[in-house]
Length: 336
Image (cartoon, rainbow, N blue to C red; front, side, top):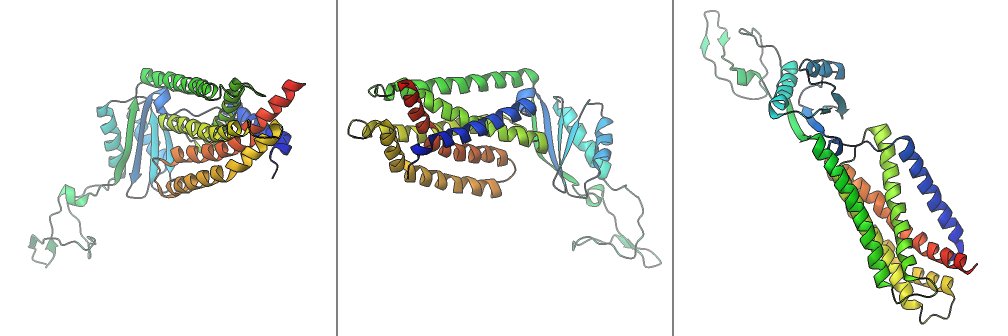
């Protein structure tokens, strides 16, 4: 297996993926969640047939809360995105939604049969005609028509602060990675300078993060998926995982350079072959766990796990087919 012999192919594939991701980001952008924009998010699940979105909107509009984005989820769920609201307004929304689907109360009910879902009722009296009189309290006649699954509220200033901190965190991580790799490979100065290992690793990381961002730009456009602080955590995790894979390969190159009789390209190819199985097996094991969480882990962590799956798959590719071939290409260009 000669991976390095197809360096131009691997670099072309990576370039195409990066360009496609940049286009998606430029055209669609990322759909920021309330963690970054500020506002409130309410997720509910109806225990009865969910009203039409137009009916739900009419109910909420009567509260005078401004623009409210309503997104149906599944058959019974709904997510509301609106301006930052206080606890009283939060409860007003829930009460209005409950009232809109509550059955009307009646004082007298006449029926040949009453279905009480296999529960026992107490007959208070029987009138002269033999009709049973049953007293149903308001609590008995009403069931919980909806349940609240989630409520998050973030002020606009806090959202802006989180956005800035997330950006700075990513920049600091990248700087530390370059510094660490340059220091670790300081004794490897020929035929490629140690700092070039750091730059190659950063290009690979940029490739991985860009692909994740591009996919989520598409998901935001066509599925309304928003990014939040959990997404930032997933991206930082991808950075750490990907650079670890890349360093393993680079470290093997460093070990092989002094004792190899081959040129730089041949030594790099041997190093890739030696670490190929480890990289694939490690990533495959990790992805098995993540895929289980993706399909059965619940909606709360679904897109967090999806970002990890995309990032780790991309990171495995870049550590083998991008970072090392880039070093070889750089070494060839420097000799011209």
